Length: 454
Image 1 (tube, rainbow, N blue to C red):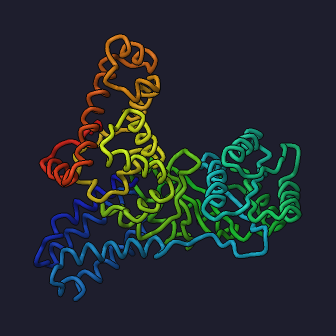
Image 2 (image 1 turned 90 degrees about the vertical axis):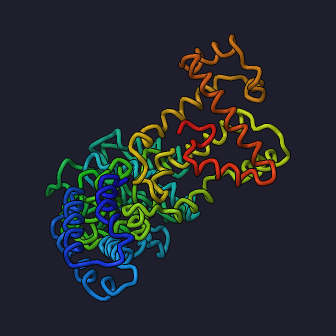
Image 3 (image 1 turned 135 degrees about the horizontal axis):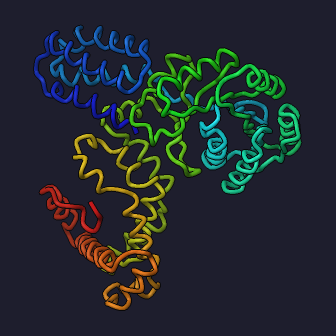
């Protein structure tokens, strides 16, 4: 996420971090680089101008020039100003109302609006323990109604039926009436999208809004459209008061222009980020954490929160106990660890939250890909339970059968078994006194992480 912007900004600031003295000249040069980085990231020009001016004002004052570590102080100023541009703090949904709390979802066609309704319903159900119902008022695209029905079943929330022959206002009011009678806490209303904002679309959604009086009106927009995302949100907000924005497809957005432009241009907060295709791939937007990611400082807090929510602690405890007792780490354990990694959105999503990733060579990054992990899972999945628990018995004919079953070559099976042997050896070191220390000392020498393809 925001890889291009991170690379440019960290490059501009890298040389100043350890500088003992700053001059107006090297501050000017650095600001020029930051300005170019923001423009290349498709940040709106008014936002860039204001941002650079704010940083310059603080950079030439006592806060930076008078600091004992001026290079670090300037990095902090840039970090603080990024947070300010994006909105200071997380702006959560306001659900403090008499149930049902109605959330109206709006957006252009192709922005990922219906998918976001499914993700948000899961988020509210699992994180906020709310009873949730979803309804589609998109009568122009019958497939959208079916899509939402499927998503509702997948995430385990109630679906209110509708069809293309009904009027959007009647669908929304009927759903609201049902939610009131059945004590549903949150009602999410999906509306029709268009290829562009037009009068008919706005009149229709205004009528729906007036009929159900939502506590939240969220505009869903594709992050990869850059500053156009902010301009579209502003045009929509001018016609119908929004309470927030959801940026989708941020996992494919290497620039970051939308995230840095939306708040300043619309005056509305970004409330969520869509970070993938899975129904769990929705994150509350924390400006301070995103600013840290942009400056390659990582987002360890989000990573810890994610681990607390997604790691199977019972399985982890069993594995730790197994290793501590000296029992062999087998291929079934290996497969479970790969599955845990997948629950974080893959290795790419995990690395995105770790500090210092901009310093990793591009060639090394390319080696770390989720396709390789999926292939490892497929190979292990083609083994029998007996083989997974006794990998030493996997010889010629077994290897050929496993390769055929998983659609790979025998060499790939051999490579997996070799990687597994390395990881098994690492796990044995864990069970010995001082084992972790020895492992870390070995990795400081630039070695690979044993058993994994990077």
